[in-house]
Amino acid sequence: MPSASRHRASRDGFRPIRVSIEFFPPKTEEMEKILWSSIERLAPLQPKFVSVTYGAGGSTRERTHNTVARMVRETSLKPAAHLTCVNATREEIDAVVQSYWDAGVRHIVALRGDPAEGVGHSYRPHPGGYAQTSDLVAGIKRIGDFKVSVSAYPEKHPEAASLDADIDALKAKVDAGADQAITQFFFDNEIYLRYLDKVRAAGIDIPIIPGILPVQNFKQAANFARRTGASVPYWLAARFEGLDNDVETRRLVAAAVAAEQVLDLVDEGVEDFHFYSMNRSDLVYAICHLLGLRSQAPAKPAAKAA
Image 1 (cartoon, rainbow, N blue to C red):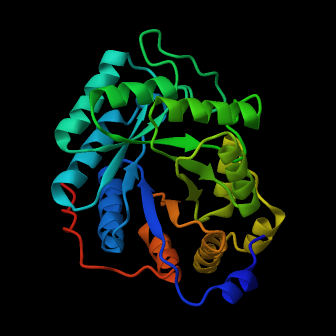
Image 2 (cartoon, rainbow, N blue to C red):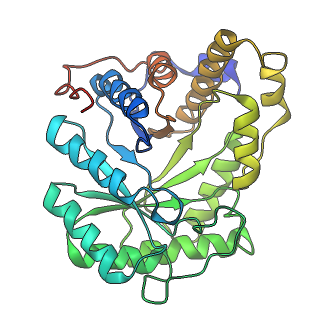
């Protein structure tokens, strides 16, 4: 469990941190309004970049592209587009990469992706596609001088035979040209710190940015964690006990827990953090405020939903 007294004792003011924020593409007009309202709210924090996810089986490819292209056109944010290997030939994926370059996007988050059938089903590479993430990274780098982020799993990918095997897969992505990695979310900082030690011992020296999931709904977060192989410590469950029907208190607790987790990592020398926003701005904004981030000169405002 993060130690509040530890970071209070060691911090003589706010230390500079950098944040990036993840969104997912909207499925409906109402979700689009929520997304662009969130972007408008968080843009003045001047995140290092904002990423836009990709649905299972490439199901949101067009919406992801449209969202990212709109960010380039209408805001001063630096978007990073997610791209996966699933359900597409190399030619199709290469065309998407080229379209991102033409739209002004210079950062791609390269992922293998979940099977079209969803998490829990076996992954089958497309016979004419990129077989794995390292191949996709190399393909992206051949097309343009993109910055490429990849995933990392402090508790190993659910399909990996072992943590060492998973770190070998990360090394293959780095050897293919990956510039940085963003971790799956975790709640116990010791897991991340031990993982970082093992990654460095394996000769991997790219930035490994911790992924932070603010817990907006504990039951949903716990279910998500089970599907992705992330553990949920007992103390986190205790923090949210009895709050199932108390939304306002849950938000206060969620902000405090996430800020505490980040502050503890700051004391370990971590400076970059990636927030999984779930397209909800208020909680992420509150956490960033607790961390000492303040609104800067506003970015170009996000346009209203079409």
